[in-house]
Image 1 (cartoon, one colour):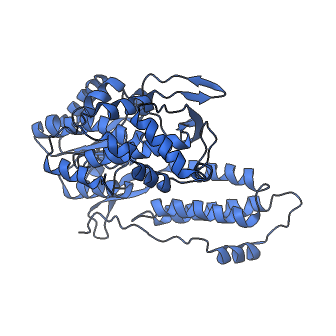
Image 2 (cartoon, one colour):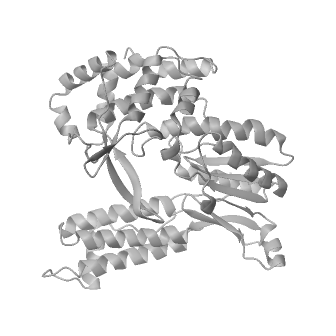
Image 3 (cartoon, one colour):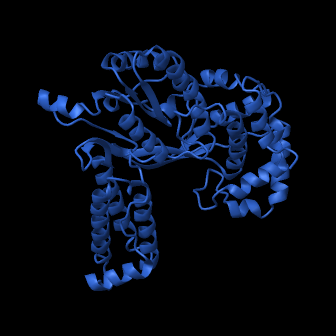
Length: 437
């Protein structure tokens, strides 16, 4: 392919300080746009235009040629995004998502592909969210190993309040210009951010923030926090710490580990001022500092306090012991996540039990519990996964038998059905033992 994006990455890796001035042709190239089209999931929700992937593909070559021409002529204008809400822990309304029109998703994917080639080589190892070949389990594993093997005694866990809604466009533009000198690409990104949000038939103009749900927003958020947080910690916090200090960030959630209490306290104080300088704010209810490590349990008992623990990425980290009585970092499903997940599933199965056939309902239920186990079935979390599996299965049985004028199941019949569809069994899927090499 004439516009092979791997050349961009190779050049960036060879010239880490270079400013790329010729990038826009990668976005407008028809072959690249076709690859972006093919990679999109056709089952996702439709945007304000109501066009599906199948419908757009009926005249694919004509549509892509037209899109490419409009992009080249700078005549492309993103459509308003449709507001939608998904369940969120601690929120009655839910987490707001902005659903782009299908053609806009193609352009967003093309821009994302270009930005990833530029920024992936320069992002730090402390960043894990929305990146190639990186996952939450890698972040969880790194935290456990660091606490287990390094001199860590204090943890600062933090969350940025409404990060995606408050991301400042002017600062983002300055950050992008460190590596991008193609004005057409920068102008396209600005147009994508400025697209309005349609909710209840009314359109609201955007003045700041990056819409959650947009394909390009995750990489833009990583660029923003790379300069605001990651580089600041690397260049201004860690070098001046007398003891060890580490940062772990997954999207806008992050956690810092320190050897000394006074340095954890100093970081907590400076963090507020640092973020405020870039239009961001810490969420106090989700931010705290605590003692955690080999000596934390003894110190807590001496003070008459509870055993220290903290929650990150849906898991509660607590101080455990090996069979030989030595300190070990252990993790389990957070109580809040456990309860919310079951409530959400109960609401779903109650809603659809009389709408979709039993076979389809059970296949979707199987996918839901399998997805839960794929994430939470990790080292030391077997018992809570087994408990979740038990209640998930009982909830399914209960609401299948509460359909009016439908045949009920006894447990023997229900278990036979579970065996037939291959209902998942609980087993550890991800080895996150902090002692393994």
